[in-house]
Amino acid sequence: MAYVVKMPKLGLEMKSGELSAWLVSEGDEVTEGEPIAEIESEKTTAEIDAKEDGVLRRVVLAEGESIAPGGALAIVAGADEDISGLEADAGVGAGGDEPAATDDSAADSGAAETTETAAATGDASSVAKQRPSGSDGPSGNGEVRASPRAKRLADDLGVDLTTVEGSGPQGAITERDVEAAAESGTAAETDDGGAAAGTADTADKRVFAPPSARRLARELGVDIAAVEGTGQNGRITESDVRAAGGASAAATDSAAAAGAEATAASEPVETERPLSGMRRTIADRLGESYREAVHVTVDRRADAEELLAAANAADDALGVDVSITDVLLLALSASLDEHPEFNATFEDGVHRLHEEHNVCVAVDIDEGLIAPVVRDVASLSLAELAETRAETTQRALSGDFTMDDLSGGTFTVSNLGVLGVESFDPVINPPQVAILGVNAIRREAVPTDDGDVAVRRVISFSLSFDHRIVDGADAARMLGTLVEHVENPWSLVIAAGGR
Image 1 (cartoon, rainbow, N blue to C red):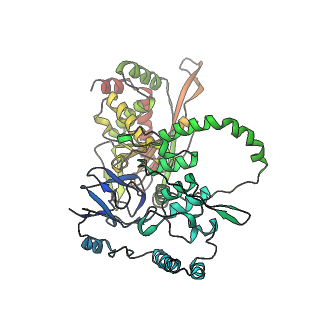
Image 2 (image 1 turned 90 degrees about the vertical axis):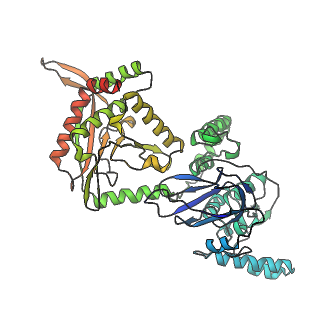
Image 3 (image 1 turned 180 degrees about the vertical axis):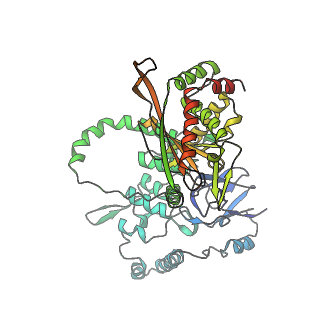
C-alpha cells in the first residue's frame, strides 16, 4: 500500500524536525522495518523506518530542511503504483513540481529550468545571463539549490557547488553530494582566477550514523563511510568515529609537528558555529528556567569517608560496577521520601508531587548537556540501579538515546565534582522544582571529638530550588537529610543490596 512518510512527533514539546540525511535515494527499493531517513528534533535524533516494502517514489523534503510534525517527507509506493493522490496530499504536484514553498526554493527551481532551456538551445549568452552573479566559483555557493547543511559543508571543504550534480529532490545538492565531490575531485579548484574540474564516480554506500556522529567525523577529518559501526544494527556511534580519528591522528602526528611552526605564524582564524537544534533547545529551556523560576541555591558539606567505603564494599560484593553516584542516588531517593515537595514539577500553576523518583542524571555530550532519566530509583536494588544508570549514561554518550530517555524526570542531579568544581549554582530543569549539584571530594583537616585534628575526605552539595514553590528552610532541611544519609549510608546500601 502506498503511503506518505511523515515527520513524527518526538515528544510533546517538539515544534519542528530537521531531515538530517536520507539513507536511501529516490527510486531505491525500501524494506519494511529498515531505516530510510535520519531526523533531528530540538531535543534528540531518530531514524524513520519504512512501514512497508516498496520504492521511495518521491522525496518531498531535502536534507537540511525542517518541517512541523506530521509534515510530508516522502512518498513510498509500488514501482508502478499511481501516487497522484498522495502527491496532492503531500502538497506536491505530479512530474516534479515543487511543494508549496516557504523559502526561495521555487525561485531557485525556476532559474534552474530557464538555464537548462538556454543550454539545450545552445544559447550560451542566455546561460551566462541566468547564472547568478558570482556563481562561477566558491563564492556562488549561496546561489545554487542545496540544503543549508550542504552549503556549510561545501564552505568547510572548499567545494564549488556550481560544479556539483545534486542527487536530492528536484536536483538539490545534499551533504553526500558535497562529500563525494570533495573525495573524488569533482570540486573545482580555483587557481589564479582559473578553474579545473575533474569527475569520478563514487560508489553509493549506506552509512547508518546519527547526525552527531557525522558532524564529529567532519570535525576530525574522518571518512564516515570507512568507519565500522559497533552500535545496534551496525550503527556508527561517536565512540566509533573517535576511535577512527585516533588512528588517523597517530598516523599524521609527525606531519602535524612539522607544520606547527608555520601554523603558529599564520593569521588567527575566526570560526562561526551555528547552534544545532539540540543546542538551541538547551539555550531556550535554560533561558525559560531563569526567566520563570526564582532560583535560590543553598550549599552544604558532608563527610564522604563512609560514602566511599560503602561504594567500594558494594562494588566488591555485588559483582557489578557500583560507583559513588549510585550510592548517592540511594541517599537522594531516601531524602526525597522524607521531602516529597522536591520530587515535583510545577506547570500551569500546579505543584505536582510525584510518587516515583525518576531522577535525571546530567551527561555532557558533544551537542551540550542532556539529562537522561533513571526511572523509579526507590524500587531498584543497588545492582539494578548501577546497571540501569550505566546503561542510560552509555546510551547518552553514544548518541543512541531516545525521547523516552529524556522524558518524565522529577528531579535532576548534575555532578561537576568529577571536573574538579568545588561549588556552582545549577540551573533548574523545567518543569522540575529543584536540582542537586554534586561538587568535588576534597581532603580537609577536620576537628575530632577528642580535640584532635584529622584529615578527612569531604564532599559538598549545591541545591538549587524554585523559591516560588518551596522555601529556604525547606531546602535546608532537605540538604540536612541528604547529608545524614551520605554520612551514614550503610543501612541504605544493605537494604538495596538485598532487594
